[in-house]
Length: 349
Image (cartoon, rainbow, N blue to C red; front, side, top):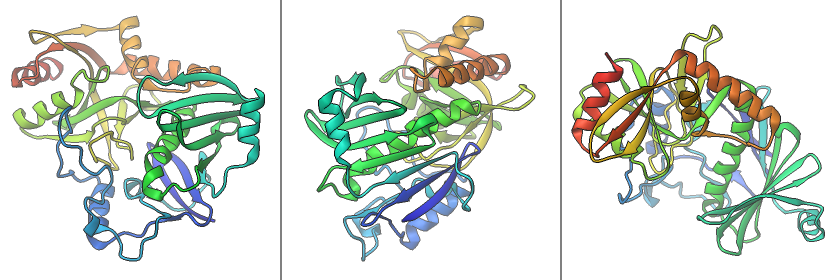
C-alpha cells in the first residue's frame, strides 16, 4: 500500500493506493510549478471562461512533461502536491482499491442498497445509495457506463474507490478528485470549514469571493478584475474552502486542490473582504444583503452531504458565523470592465 498525506484549510487527509495503482513521480518542470504553488505564489494562468479551451487540470500540461517510465496505473496527483504534509492523524483516508467486491453489485440488485439521490441530467452522472452506515456513490462518465464506485464509511472517515476493470489512471482521475472533495465536505462541515462553489481574487491583501449558479459568469468576473484592477491575483476559480477564526471576527478563504477548469492550486489562506453573488443583468448595480438573505446566499453555494443531519448542522453554524463577519452583496452585472470597477468601489469603500 502506497500513501501520501495532504492538508487543506487545516484539515489533514490521506490518499492511499493498492497495487497496481501508484502515485506518479514528476519531472523537474512539473516539480517547479508544484513548489511555487506550495509557497502560495501566483499561477501563470487566467480563469477559464465558458467557451474557452480547457487547459490541463493538473500541473502536467503536455505529454512531454510526463515521466518516461510511467505506466497506465500511475495516478497524477500533482494538483494535490502543494498541500502535501508529513504523515499524521488524518481526518479521512481515501483508498484506491484494486478490485470491486461482489457485495456492491449484489446489494444493489437485491435492494439492500437504497437509492437516495440521482443526478442524471448532466455528465458526469452519479447515483447515491445508502446501505446501513455506508454511503455508496456510483459514477457514470456517460449514460450506462459506470467508471467507478465510492464506498464511504460512517462519518466519512474512510472511503474506498473501486475503478471499473480496464480503467487507466488518467481515466479515473476526475472521479478520484470528486471522491476526495465529497469526503472533504463532510469533514469540513464538522470542523467549521465549507467548500464553496466560487471564484476568488485577492486585492489589497483581502479576498473577494464571487458566487452564483453555473454559467452566471464567476470566472468571467474574476478575469475582469485581473484585467482591469491593478494588483489582483487569482486564489481559486471553482472550489475554495472558507473558515472562520475562533473569535468569529475574521473569515479566511483557502486554496484547494480543486479549481474546476482552471488549474489554480495554491496553498494559501487570505482574509475575506466580501462575498458577492452575481446575477446577469443589462446593467451594473450592486446592493447589500444581510440576515437571512446573506445566509441563503452562502448556504446555497456550499458543497455538502445535505441528507446528513450532523453535516447540515455544522454547515448551518459555519454559514451563520460567516454572515457575522463578512460583508455580502448582490451584483447585477454585465460582462464588462465597469462591472468589476463598480463592485470594487462598493466593497472596498
